[in-house]
Length: 265
Image 1: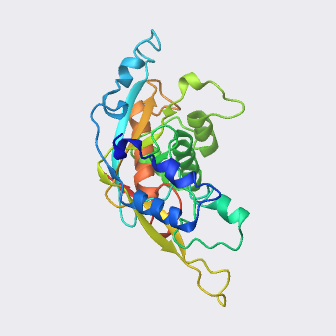
Image 2: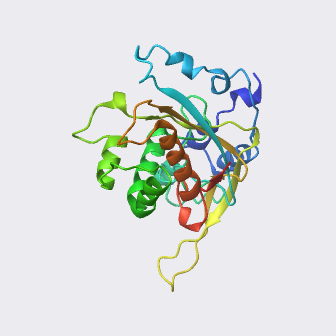
Image 3: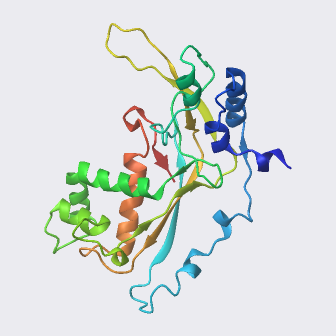
């Protein structure tokens, strides 16, 4: 079997046998960092007709959702996703505390179970946009007033969030937009390693931690199912622009305060 086909990045990252030694981990890290993603035009990521899938979703053309994509590229220093997941070699360290695998990645990462490729779960995309709307309430309200020209919106940001993303009282998913997993759609090398140096306090020593990141210049495709109906007077195209601008200008993933996670068209 072709090595490129058989090698699964997620499997290599997480499926480290408890009895394996640090040499095995080091080899896996090398394979991950040197992995070249080939752009397979036959892949479902490139030829799935989502609009065709949803064409019979509703008989009311005014409410028929539209599948939308937005391709964005990572900027320097890259993108971190899923670093809170179980780190590489955790099982080995747990069962052999004296073992110190210097070559391993010390943080987790998000890999798709099927393809083994890094991805941003749709729930994460939705959560990022939701939290940014709340955090940057003033800027969002100014945009709605000046650019979208909303006249009847009350200005209550919590009402906007509940209508866009739902709440315990608003569970009608058929009138809300859908956020799919964001996937890598470029080719070539997609990973680099990096080091972070957390300090417990100003007097403690520096302990560099090796991390895995999606490198600069990698294309990520964000995918949405946008409803035709207005939400609090916000048109479908304005909502899509809102989602994309938040992702570009406010960043995704971890450590956006140090420059990671910013995107450009």
